[in-house]
Length: 273
Image (tube, rainbow, N blue to C red; front, side):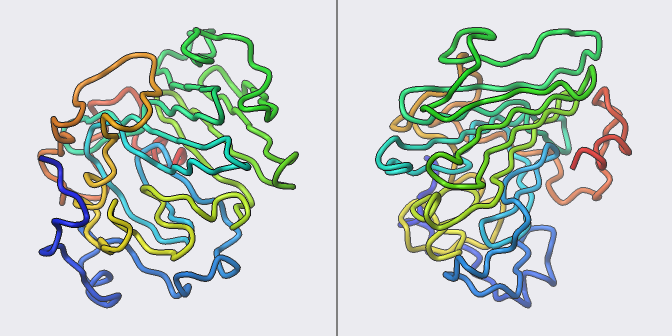
């Protein structure tokens, strides 16, 4: 069964120094004091296509398992509307990328997917599981879409009516999908938890809300979407819990992964990330 925080007594609770010495498996700690939202960096938190994750306080890590993952969740978001942000990753032997994201606010869901076909004129999104449905608002917040190029699109959810200056941005670069929380604040995300960490404490907490996980493989698997959580994607894809996330053949492989199995080049992937 997938592990939970309450059963992870043997987890790698390495020190900040240990994390830096073994960056292949540990979350890269910053000098920012956890639990201080005002100290959070101004750069957006979120996830980039070749999945790099930037936590609420700016810590960086990678997780390359293939499954549906909880990026952030808060049932009380925006005076009870609730927020769920799930990502779906796809494994390419030694590495993975984010192929789609689904965001729920209130009773509305928007799902966005990348595409490797540069001649495809479709926008590749679903609104409440309807292919390219009316793109107006999600949970009452305005949504806009801009096509930057044949292979590049950007969707923006403007949270300004409740949280001035704040946005959720989803961008696609060919098959890669990126999610950013812009101008994040404790007012908006103070109760959020998930792969981006626990906003209030600044820690990478397990589901039990108290166990700190420093090993990114363990941490990623901890936040696999569970059957008890909302099913946001319009299609169900393997694996689904209790089946575990599919791990890459060589999770400690070289930084420049074997991108020959993807339609994009190494240089394009690095620009996208």
